[in-house]
Length: 80
Image 1: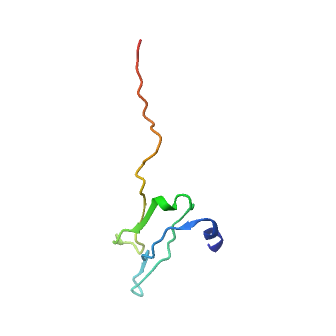
Image 2: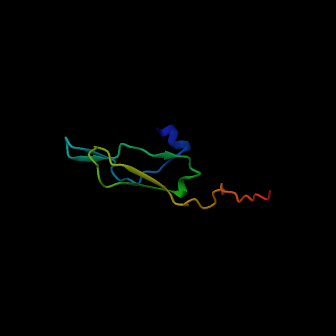
Image 3: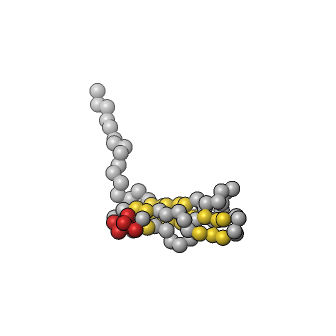
């Protein structure tokens, strides 16, 4: 993991991602890793409910909200 983090970025903000019902403790055992070039546009957080699991769901949000993405819908005219 250390070698991977030399070339990539860890998105986690320190929030716990796992709850141990046996011990009643929280830990951060889930890692979210990305290329450093996109790190500034990503926001990392957890959903604060376990939803019946022992892991909190992780949210990774693109803060650019599709700004600058190429348009795929083209205007076409049928002249025939």
